[in-house]
Image 1 (cartoon, rainbow, N blue to C red):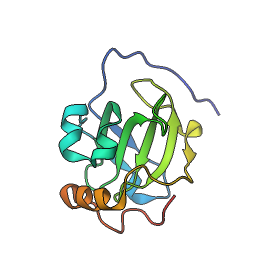
Image 2: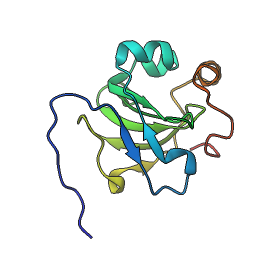
Image 3: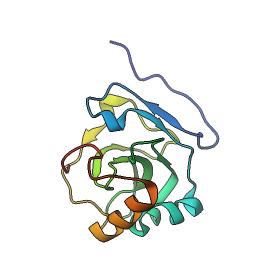
Image 4: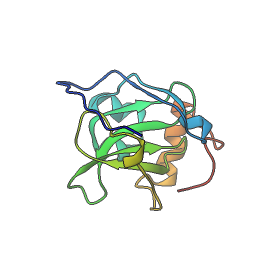
Length: 136
């Protein structure tokens, strides 16, 4: 199967559409984009302070797609956070759009977002405990 075309952009996009996941809350529209200033009021502080090209809240599930600094603070990566801001999947890169599905990996690390921040942010964004199942 063929995949891996490319696109050239000069600025971040308004949103993304994800489909084909067996994790239903992950499928759908992510956006509109929150720049780093808007992210400070909508995301947990420990996550908002690391936003690069933007954060894209899901239209209804509470999940968030965000371009953030990797733990350790050097490079950036795209991360899918569930409704409780647990890091579920990541794709390395500093591009304005994330790579295709095969470049994503399931995460098995402790989330950078402390539980107290995640609970407060989930209450603001409408996240729920049922936002996609167990931790990553």
